[in-house]
Image (cartoon, rainbow, N blue to C red; front, top):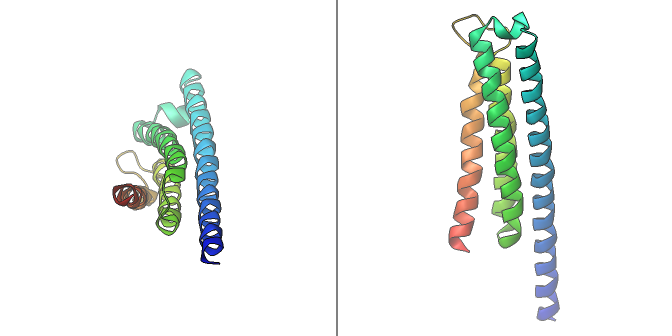
Length: 151
């Protein structure tokens, strides 16, 4: 009887890990697609010398940072999703995946919105999303590292 129970528990853990993996893979690929598309849009703004983009140096910097960080965090989320299958600590992985996904949204969103409605010298208050998102993403990756350390 206990053998069947252990097999069921193992199957449930594998199913949960697959769910976490799938969520991270979908999120990561959507992020990479969106932020690479954003890069193309920014290049087209530069091509046509759109004043909204070209004339405000800080906005151009912040939007470029949003593009770069969004793409990189999307790729990291994909790697996270591929790594989940190798671990059995589903609870820690679920929390880590949620933290990483939240951080991967907040960091580029903070850069993007920091460049909207800003004065030439200072970003808008939305820039405060960047350190918050970075802390969440870093915590998620630390939980993943801890899970690998203990595996």
